[in-house]
Image (cartoon, rainbow, N blue to C red; front, side):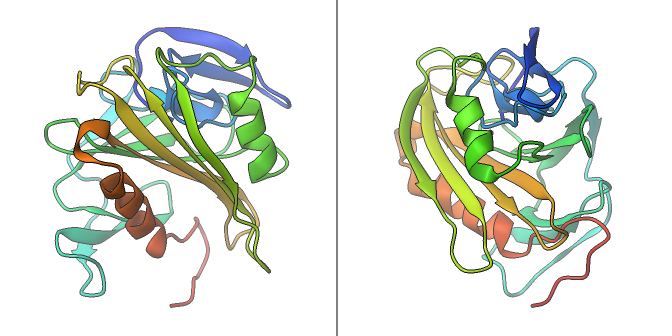
Length: 231
């Protein structure tokens, strides 16, 4: 699911044609084929996601809609009401950019000031989170240089449906050179019945727990567009 972006390639997904940037999966995820992206949505993302300021056509805003600090979140995070309609937790001070998609909402990217960490959010067009990751991992979707799958976990539990992919990439087109990238890409069914993906990117050199924690925190308050979510 998601990533960085510069060159654009056209990939045919299971259902829709997606715009894939080097390493970015369909639906504007997975940059350079690294980030997880639905191969059915047409977005111009960056890496396993993309919508980075480096992506052509990306629209960047200082901070988007007003956001507020949430005392229940870790220090430095804020609950952010994105212009696309969803709510998510993100580190305060991160910049926002978007990449158009032919499926659902725009692909949204949040980046740290130095550009070395990123969160990517997009809609998934496949029939299920498992099917979306299966497509992303198939030969139909280009992968970033050095793409290495670390784990793929089915998260289905009761009423929750989801899938989480972790992988490494030597580089992500349009993104800083941080050495090996570590990406955690989770795709799931939200409260509105639609499928979404949220992916966290960062350097592998400083360990992998920070990307996992970034993703967990982001998802802790996630609420899809036009939906009222409980506590």
